[in-house]
Amino acid sequence: MAVIAVVDYDMGNLHSVCKALEKAGATPKVTSSPKDLQKAMAIVLPGVGAFDPAMQNLRSRDLVEPIKNIIADGKPFLGICLGMQILFESSEEGSEKGLGIIKGKVKRFRRSSDIRIPHMGWNQLEITQPMSLLWEHLPPHPWVYFVHSFYVEPVEQKINAATVTHGSQTVTAAIAYDNLTAVQFHPEKSSNVGLQILSNFVSQVREKIAV
Picture 1 (cartoon, rainbow, N blue to C red):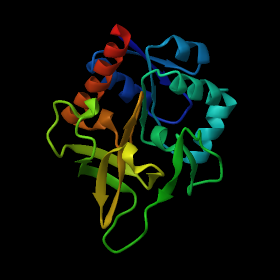
Picture 2: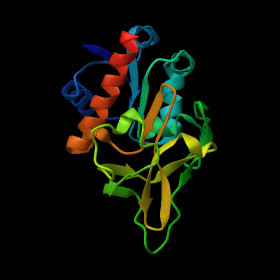
Picture 3: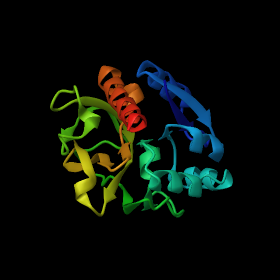
């Protein structure tokens, strides 16, 4: 079994993420301990809520540097929703600095007549890294579930693994490079497609262990 640490920083429904990881064949371990993160085979950073409280909670638990070090060391990592956004340098949602692991900012959707905020519900992905293991065994334009009012804008567009169009805006829906993957949508709420994405991540973890 692949033991995957799910970071607990009081910013999300950990139960649904853990149940989905179990269905995907992993053994999730909810923790806020840097030692547990180091021992785990991979890390999942979920998140629901606002940018500033998320960063404040990570700092109060002394988790910022351990997370940065674990990613730098090459351990498989998956960020989900807010857990994707806080990987960036800053956000228009607040004033706190993000983890700064990815260069770029988190931006607010522009209000217009053809858009609803938050972007909530099912939407189709446009895959921009078709060879990424994240998308194995999926249809060309999979449907996934979103709930967000902000989106990430990486400096290096080549790390985009998928985009999504909401109204007239096309924004980053997933990123992937090296050992780091992150998604704006909620795989744990995305039915069979989401379960397959998590299964693909678990498979990557097992391949990493086997090397």
